[in-house]
Length: 187
View 1 (cartoon, rainbow, N blue to C red):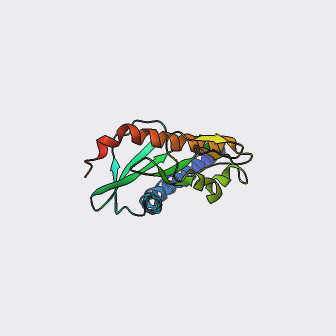
View 2 (tube, rainbow, N blue to C red; view 1 turned 90 degrees about the vertical axis):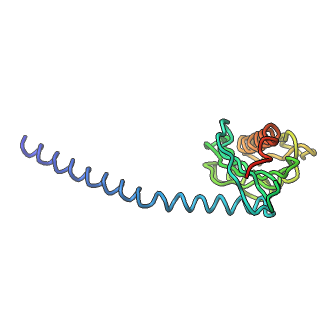
View 3 (cartoon, helix red, strand yellow; view 1 turned 180 degrees about the vertical axis):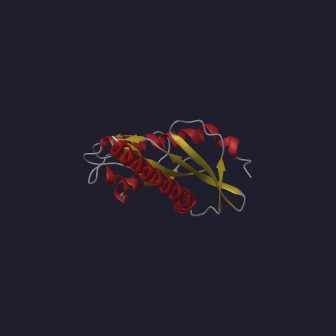
């Protein structure tokens, strides 16, 4: 019995040390990881709206799909908007950055992270899919056949992923249409 208590105490001590070390490593690496993620996000925003020289984040977004909104400016003039949306795909949340011009036309779409199936939903990152959104305005639909003006062609075997990203783009366009006038004076 004494031996079991001794082994239990040793195991408890080792577990406590490991938890302490993991907590310390987390505290040290968290700011570095956050800084790297911010840099990736900023670089991606610049790729989507290259004419912008500043991106001002809008506070108090209360939308389930839209996580962040940035007003993009060049020489203090609004040139567009960047929205970070997280629609639910087949494998979970898909983090997507969407660039819109002032007319709410899609300038670009960038997948930041996803858990989609390799070889199927993961193909959403490919330019052959993403570039279909460029120039589109209004409500976009998904089709399995040749797309019309207001449609994009779904990825073969990944209709759920295609629809999720399209839902995110549509939500971004609708959100900007609803709030665009509020952001004209963002400094």
